[in-house]
Length: 462
Image (cartoon, rainbow, N blue to C red):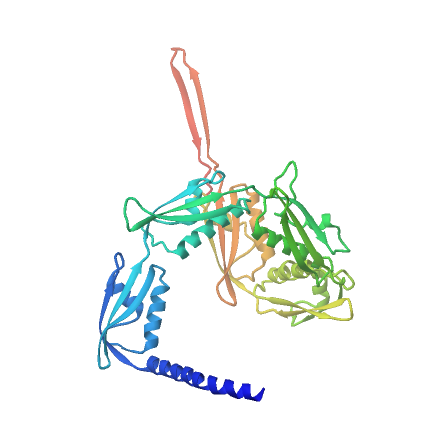
């Protein structure tokens, strides 16, 4: 055994030395510097030679190493317009180099055709590809087109569509190519059944109802399958579970498969609900404007209620947030912190940074052509210089609606800085003009009449 090992060392050692020497030589060559005296470009037909030089990063008079040559080839290759790139040494005088960049361009597009498409029109396929005549056509471009067409077919419910691209030289121009996509649309897939597994608290039917877009096929409704909407629907199921107390709910796995004729899709989803949680103590930190008792009344849940992620989010965005907005503290930040207390209880602490109340700097009214600004302003419950209140702003919009002058009233608070806001009040006036016409015959059998147009322009009395 020892003799074999020694024999191996004797044979392998010279080879190892040669490999090390070769590696050191390569590194020395790569690190060796030389000066480019001249650069030529060959093989380019539609791409300007100066552009190729510029894109390569090489320039006459530049000092380079072997790494710069490799980087130049890599940079040109990333343009995806050449099928072959070589940098050839034409001459070498000392450390002065004369080189040629030899390129072979990909052919250019003459036209794109489709064969086999029946359910989607050519113009819709063209729109998905977004191409133009003369575009450089390489394998990566053709593959990109194919992916886009498959995505379009998936959106339309044809998940089993097959597309094969065929590139052929154009009969009009030998430097151009025609690309034909041979399409087998196959059957349109409909979701036949969705089954949930693993849930103890809810039936499969109840969880299916939480999915908005992914539905089962029925006689009154189709059930196309959209992969992106399916992902969104799975998240809706998780949102539902987490809003019913199952804070740790997760989808363990899912399975999608087809029926014998590949028309029907079957979906199986395995969920792990985990344990059910309840709200524990509710506390607040950083609040000065309101007491803890006042804030507790606006939270929307109390200690002992089922844990609900939805209620927790609503408590910040709608309830407590609205309370501070009505008081003018539009920059108030409210962050709920969750803390496990025991096996199934979650304590909630709201960390509040109230900031300061915002004052109204000015109110801009736009969209009124007949109604005077002062008519609108006298109906408002908000004024420049006041502390902003969302409640009063909503009330102002409601009063403008009551006037019946406007078909649309849209008030928008616009922050100016940390202490001031402007209000943009956009209105759309109703058409209030009326026209009356009367006609009669006189004793002399001639037509007489009058036309009256009333312009209900609102000047206001104030």
